[in-house]
Length: 216
Ligand code: E4P
Image (tube, rainbow, N blue to C red; front, side, top):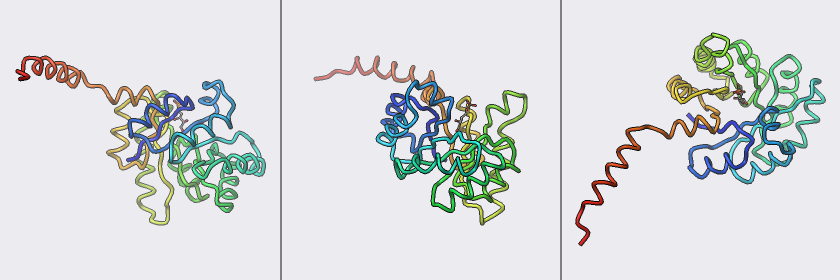
C-alpha cells in the first residue's frame, strides 16, 4: 500500500518527503484554509517537493464550471489530480475530465455504491472517508473492505482506492491488510507511526552499553 500525506502545510510535506515514506499528497478546501495561503501558491509549491500525485479540489457546483476550474489547476503540473466532491454533478464532471485526460480523485465517498459509480465515471482514485464514519458510530473500515471487494471483483475497474480521513496508525495498518491501494495520512498520524517506547528504550540501552565498550 502506498502512503500519501493529507495536508497543505508545506513544512510537514517536506519533512515527511525527506523521510522517503510518502509518494503523494492530498489537500482539500479545509486543509488549504488551514495553511493560510493562496490555493495555487500552495499547490504549486507542493509540486516542487513531491514527485507524485497531488490532489487539488474544485469547489464549483456545475459540472462545466468544475471542468473550467480544473483546467488551469491541471495545467500547473503533470502530477495534479483534480479532486471532485461526490454527487451527480461531480460524476458528470469526472466523465468530462477523464475524456480530456485530466486525472481525478472523487472524494467524500461514504458507500461502496458511491465508489462504484465514481469508478464507472472514470475516476482515477476514490477517497472513502473512514474516520468520519467512525465518528458517527459506524465502522469505517467495513467500507474500505467493501470497496476493495467490489473493485477486485471487476477486472475492468482500474480506479485506485485512497483510504482517507485516517485518524490513527491502526487505520493505516488495517487498510493495508485489506489490500487498499493508498492511505492518505495526516502528519500527526505519520509521527505516531514512528513511535514505539521499546525502540526508544532500546536505543537508550544501546547507547549506555556502547559507552562501556573499550575504544582503544
Ligand atoms: C482526504 O482526501 C481528505 O482530505 C481527508 O482525509 C479528510 O479527513 P478529515 O475527516 O480528517 O477531515
